[in-house]
Image (cartoon, rainbow, N blue to C red; front, side, top):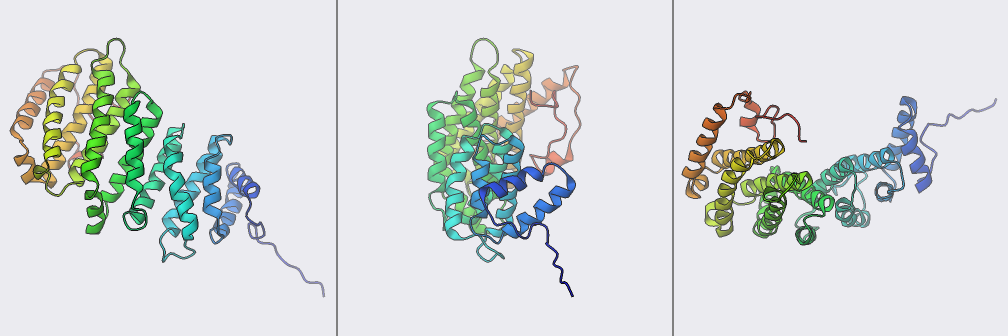
Length: 346
């Protein structure tokens, strides 16, 4: 009696660069191919070198953007499931070192923002798992890139990418439930504040006092730097009022609140950008008051309150202001759905 065998889709293919590339490409073409490729991806999760090979394909700028995006998504999802040592089919330590050491370099040179974001999210997860015990020098590398960006803040893409990486790393560490995770961020916060603060000041200067048209790329980067500083100041210090560098920068940001308010009156483009920076400052002051009320008062809050009230009164006189109080903003400064004067970043 003849015997029959059924070949399970995705079961027989050995791992190679070309075969993996073929499955990444075919997964984009149809639902059936997606299911077949998903099964094959699942099988390869048990194979040593699979995730490093995904990173190789993500790093290949000659490939279509959609394929590179699929590669970084598969890599990010795999790290969520298999990076921890006790995970089923855990990634080998030697492969982890390859992936993590390349992630920062690939991220800062990524030309596509959506891919840079996925790489930053992936890298932030790795830092949360590895720092400080297994990857003690990660912030040394990040700070080196920040200093390099400070040497040429007009290198907009590079600056944007390293700021994006740092933002998500700080958010990931700050979100940790374990106290040791948050303490690991506090270990490096003072040095980060000095380097990041310098870069922020440089990017602000590129647009706020420059003649001619608004330098929108510089404004985006200063906004990103301010957003990252907000996270660092709130989550990176236990007693902000006891830190001299925090006090100095806190005073400087209060001056910037006034400068941004004046700058927004120059032209419509400046109005949008300056108001976005004002919103980040408002979020910083609100989060500090809610999470660290004593440092907020001891750092000097009366000028903030007086200036903020003046801004509210001035906005109330403008005929084109439409706003609602967004309760999500009250709960989480990043959950903004409606803001004053604009809906989209230009």
